Image (cartoon, rainbow, N blue to C red; front, side):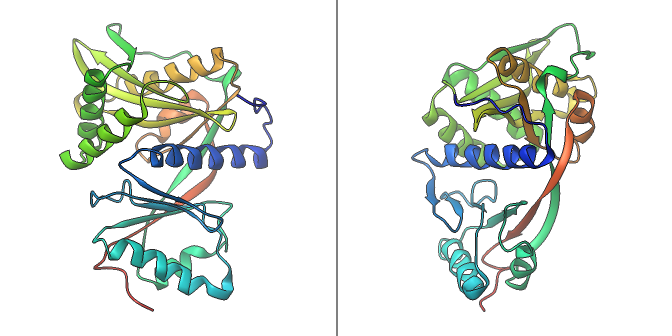
Length: 274
């Protein structure tokens, strides 16, 4: 497990948030369904399904001397396959103004989302949730299929993307460092979340609640449950990246924002040649 991170300095938390997220994508990239490139210049994931969810570039470390060439070669990698691209920037990105170069090459700055962390001994456990909510750890392909279906409904993603996530996660198995959870309400699956124990912190991913079950504290419960399991295993820091919808949920649990990830997207139609 390594030395557990319990340093609450902003710089250490920024590093923990970034590194765990990089680990998450690299873990997904270890699936046979994904082509993973892990080089000194970037992490790049490519899959055959044309979705920006899993055609991603992150942890870029580019130099100004050949930055235009490197960006164009990366975009061409996706364009030649007819795939979209999602390029994620974060505090360790080099150069720090990489986003300007990406936009010059035709990518669109879609949004920013907060990188957040919480000290697990201080996480807020005083939540109001439905009395008949139950949470189970996913341990077989049937339950995983139900979880992915819940995720797809919650995020309104195409069936093809849900199928891809199922293929990837089922190929990775059900043991740590990655665990999945499914929330049930009145006999129906309504929410899900995943936990990655990596880089000595606990990362929360794939959090979703179906629309008809929102506003009842279910998303908070699905986030808190794996965090408490991680705390019982000795972990001291929980991290995540938040959507706009989830920001209030995570703040109530005690998460604080430390930086923003930048999201730049493009397709073979929107990116241009230099």
